[in-house]
Structures are given as C-alpha cells and as structure tokens.
Image 1 (cartoon, helix red, strand yellow):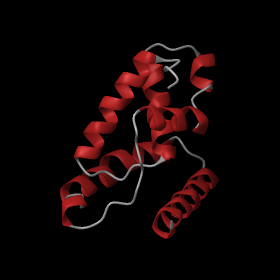
Image 2 (image 1 turned 120 degrees about the vertical axis):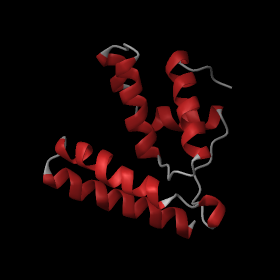
Image 3 (image 1 turned 30 degrees about the vertical axis):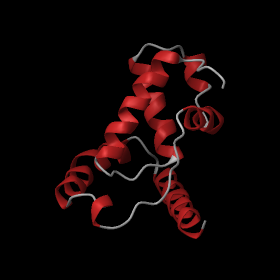
Image 4 (image 1 turned 90 degrees about the horizontal axis):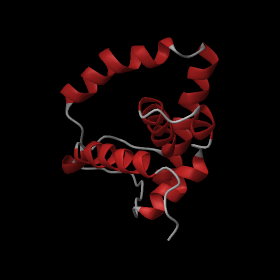
Length: 121
C-alpha cells in the first residue's frame, strides 16, 4: 500500500469523512477534493501541494482507507430536515458567492451525472 504524500492532511480528511459519514451526509469525489483543498489551505500546505489534490489523489486516499462512495438510502441513511435546511440556508449561499453562474450550472450537471452513475452502477 502506498503511503500518503500528505500524512497530516490524510489524517484530518479521514476524520472529517468519518464524521460526515456518521451524519449520513451525501459524499462524492468532488466534495472530497474540495474539502481536502480547504483543509490543506488551513493546514498551511503550499500552493504547489494544493494543486496536486485531484481525482487521482482522492482515489488513492479512498483506496488507502477502503472508502466506497455508494448511494445510501432508507431511513437509517436519511439526513434530517434540520441538517438540510441549515445547509441550504447557511452553506449553499456561501458556496454560490464564490462561483460564476456558469460554474454553478456546470457543478449541478456534474452532481446530477455522478448521482445518476452511482444509482445505475
């Protein structure tokens, strides 16, 4: 097994992932890349290190920790209405402020495509 190139980031991202998974939050590779990049910035990684956080890096992270991003369904996997409302009202506007309208449209297409792929496969 390959050792992480960014062990501190690997550890912090794993803890965040476990917390998010325990709350039954929907997770995707795109979200992991974004969260890893944000964490790398807060941990003081260089711009060059942050640029290497891509789908390949996330795939190796997932393989190291045996993470499978499958669609979760049913009552045990449902997210509370309170969590959804909080995310829509607090987090989504902050994310949208940083994006150009075409970026938001493209992101929605990617999210829908990834969800479709997970459901079909």
